[in-house]
Length: 233
Image (cartoon, rainbow, N blue to C red; front, side, top):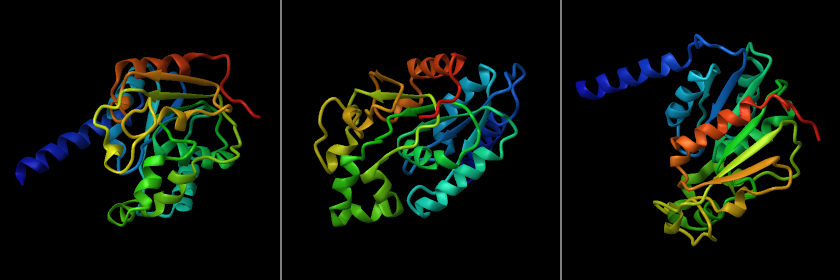
């Protein structure tokens, strides 16, 4: 009990440092949006890397399956719009990409969007889960957005998708057989769309996209390119 409390306390201290303004602050902010059943902690590695490169980092948390999707959408919109910075980028993982894209029309801040393994065309794994009694209850409010993905998007930001191609743990195999290549949870074709400006792949599974060194470098490179900060289509 005491050991668990000590570990949680250390974790909270580390997270609080992430939220501080970096000494080499570049005037820009990044909001990090996690995926299904995850939490703000999942972005710790990327958050630390972004802060090292001068970005003010904000960790957005939400109840992925227990809160109505519209509630989460309004919560994200309010969170981003209330940041003090004029430029607020979004770096999102998995379902966080669907939430961010559906929230985009009411986000007033300029910035870029980087999605990591987001099934914007809908998730075959989620669809399979929803059709099985023993797994359907796990998705709850996340069912509709994960199955349908992003339809007729209003694209307001320059965007990049980083998709994993190493199946790794192959969690989705429990409920379905994904088309190859995939990251074990999301298929490559589920991440591809004409409205995405840059699409790239990384030899990583779905969850290691959050800690992969090459992914972190790609994020910094994309955010540091000052040619485009906002794009309206």
